[in-house]
Every structure is written in structure tokens, then in C-alpha cells.
Amino acid sequence: MSFGENLRRERELRGISLHEIAEATKISARFLQALEQDRLDVLPGGIFPRAFVKQYARYLGLDPEKVVAEFQYLHAEELPEKRPPPRPPRWSPPPGALFLGALAVAAVGLLLSYRRSGSEPPVRAGQTTPTSIPAVLPSDRVYPPPRPAVSPSAVPEGLVLSITAQQSCWVEVRADGQTVINRVLNEGETETLAAQGELVLSVGNAGGIVFRVNDRPGVPLGRTGEVRRNIVITKDNLPSLVQDAATAAAAHSS
Image (cartoon, rainbow, N blue to C red):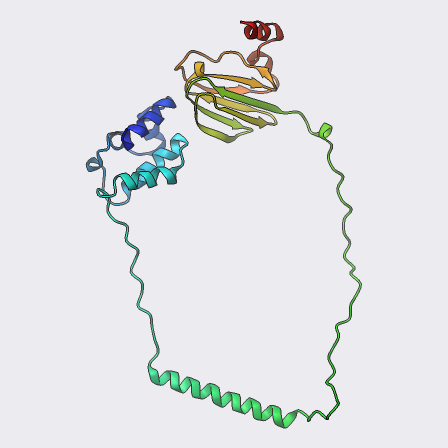
């Protein structure tokens, strides 16, 4: 499978269209299609191909640096070589200036040595020069008392979401407004995430995953291959998203 085919596969797993990426990244859909078809001759030159790959990968939730490195490795002969900018010429003083500078330093050293020898009294035999001993003053800094440890019972209970992939499936979860996962889960892989107030779940294969919230089994999200976006999970709507005890027991026994 070529580099472009891998890109297209990752996009299709997430249920994302080329038009959606073009709208978000402001890259022409024609250029994005050329990337997926490994047609670098259609793309503009210079740094543009690398920049397009980086934005494409970032939108899909892939590691942009790794994807760009793979792109450069596979298409090294077709991309312009990056050359470091030329270094500016190093300035070096003329030889005469170095000699005059050394002579001036030596003259200053002799002058300082002469002045010290004329101003400091000689030290008698057996006499030691006094050294100043710094006084140790008591510290007047006031340290605050240590904070008491917070017991587990004082922490408010939040939401704990566990997702298990029964088939390969793209998953995105936002916890309290922050994206905590955006990638493809392979079959048998499990991810556990937590939030205080709100979880928002999006999947590219609704029938390919099962989930639990606060250790309660979730209801089916949809059919195999169905894309579901922005499923909001809060404490208030949790009863509508999880199975009751009787339904869960019947599903487990079957």
C-alpha cells in the first residue's frame, strides 16, 4: 500500500471527506486528492507538499512529524533537497591588532602590580591576615503550615468512560472541552478516559465498539460502519446512555 493509499484509508476510517479537510485547512481538494494518488507532479513546488501533508495528518489526528518523515523518505527523489542557509563569513582581526592588544594587556598588568606592591604593607612572619566571618542571622521567614491532604471521599465523583473496539474503529473523545484521544482503535484494544462534568464521543464505526460509563454498560450506538459524532455524556443524561440492570443481565446471558 502506497503512502497516498494509507492517507486515504485513515481518512475513510474516520468517515471524513476530502471536502471537509479542504474547508478546514484551506488546501484545494484537487491537491489533497493528488496526495492520496501519489501525484506530486500536480502539487506546487518548494515546501508546499510537506506543508500539505502536515496539515492533512494533523486534521486526521495523526502524528504530523512522523507522517511528514515517512512522506520525505518515500518521495526523497521527487522533493527538493533542503539545504542549510550559508554561514556568514567570520571576521578576524589583522595580525598587528592582536600584537598591540597583547602589549596593552601586559602594560596594564605591570601597572597594577606596581601599585599593589607600593600600597599594601608587608606581612610579618607569624602574622595572619584577618578574614571576615559572615554573621549567621536568624531567619525571619514565616513558613505557612502544611495543607491537609484531601481524602478520596472529598473529591467529587466524575465520569469514567471505557471503550473497547470489537472492530477497527476511529474514536475521538473530548473530556471537559479538551481532546484526550483522536485515533484508530484496533480490534480488542481498550481505552479508559475520565472527566469531571462532560464527555463528548465521536466514532467512525458505531457498531464496532462497546463502551461503559462508571462501570455500567452503554447502549448500542449504531450499525457497523455508521459514523456518530458529538455524543454528549453527562451525569444528567447518563441513564439514557447506559443499560439498566435487567437489560444488561439479559445481554450478558445471551
